Image (cartoon, rainbow over all chains, first blue to last red; front, side, top):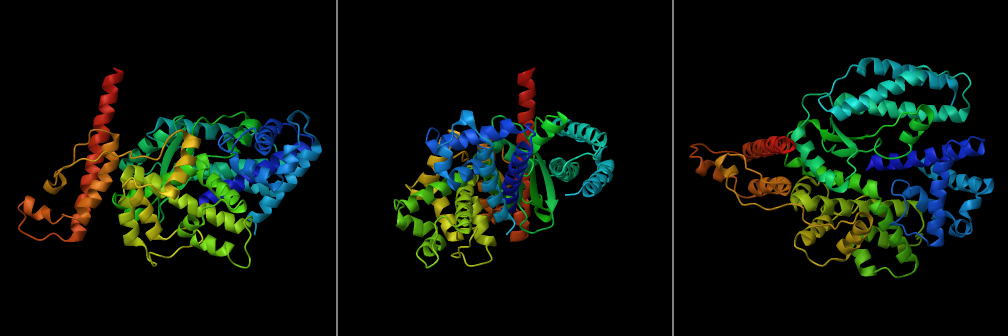
Length: 101
Length: 389
């Protein structure tokens, strides 16, 4: 169903936009980003299952976790650095490039 | 994206909005949504684009795209030829799976012969967050657009497909096929997948994994697998309400071999057999797999949400009196049974002295379904008013 593809693509492009804003010094979407990362980390560490994470953002959460589970399982949610945001953005940009193929 | 392009987009939006800003709707929720759009437009009009960064421009572009879709959806919903009967049936089903009840269904008539779909571009995602962050406007309700082929707008027998399309919306809301796909990926990686069942339901994917270029994590492979899972789920979702009516319609309209699998869809035979096993409550590997995920996500099982009734009313050209929502959904199965079975009785039971052709019977059944739904909706509405008084 074509619409589901475009809805998912829009989620990824919006999330990339939020990350770019944050790395550019604007924090207005920081809570949205950290909420997603919190879920990714929980999923990677096994403290949450797929059935417990945010429904609307699940495609992003699952994609990030699968992209590098070791990386995300090592992160302390209380101490997310810019490197984590950069790495996350890099993974999201890889996903975005799949939509452009 | 350049500032000039943003200005162009906004100018086009302004022209578009000029035509739509005076729309009126019979539905209070649509009116409220419309007012929010007006508020959003005013705030965007008062904003200067001069000092926006590239990222700021990207944000506004998303808002403008959102606005265009919203106008498009709402414009179509002011038309007087919307089949409210089928919309009401879908609203009742949707309410069971979306208790927060913050979706507004609008409909659009399209030219494509098989153009049934739910457009959920405005139902999910971050657009509402962006609007709230930039302009402080909160849209409490979100739009879902149902697309119906124009010439099938009052074809209730064909409109059974919309229950399947509602299934796609539910799938997207809960990400059911996404989770099923990830589970399958892990089972394939850990060699715990039931290979016989996998080959039966996903033969193309089975062949791929046994071929030279196999890669369980290949994106195209996973996207295709997810699409197939989604179709199986949506058929089961629809079957909860309309029994195997969709199988009847699918078998008639499939213009390729019933055994053909595609990258996006299982074969029609596979789909129909799965629905039959569900209707007959037979133990089934895939049904259990799908139901386990559905239950874990929604706390609901895939189960019959229709109530059979026996009636000869249609044969006497009388609308059926529906007692409850579950009988309402069964109406479609009732109609299909008649058209596939005993519609010739129209002549005998009504002392007709001429022969009815099948296309006339089809039209009669559709009219009777429409009347039956309409009667039920009106009586239900009056009951609810009386109770609230």
